[in-house]
Length: 238
Image (tube, rainbow, N blue to C red; front, side, top):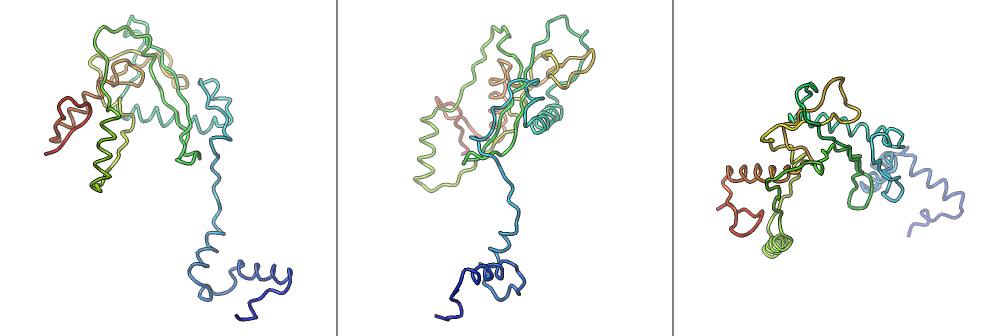
């Protein structure tokens, strides 16, 4: 052991620490590991709050405006409206176009977290009050059974297969409504004398899940996939 590496006093230890962290010496004197450590120590840490430290998300537009995270939720609302408009989900129309009472819409605000519970982003979604709709036709949309998912994952693990998972952004709004529905404009985005003529399957409408399921399955069929008989939401490609 080189006795020169032994620190003989607290003062010398402090000086040694300052010597190494100052970066005044050539990086070639130190290992790549130490160089990386110094670089990381100088990198600012961006604080992301944990779910346990955040206040409850606002439940209404009015609450959002006075929320401590109002700027972030308002930005999320702007993104939601921009996404809906880009997809042609709705368009502004004159209130004189319909004699029916337009369906109300409402804002849903929430936080999105990573697997450790740290904040990823603020989320805002506009949904229609589909609970006020009166429909006689079928609206049920099938979903993947848990047993089917477990069986597929067992095959993946057993044969060491590769899997991919995709998330469809604003999935329901990819399906077109057979007949446009008139809705009130969302709070914060009203226009004088205007309402929304909704053309795509907006979240909250009672038929939206079924319309999206039909549209998606037709797309899979166009890609050459075939449905497994008597099994919901499972397709194969021969």
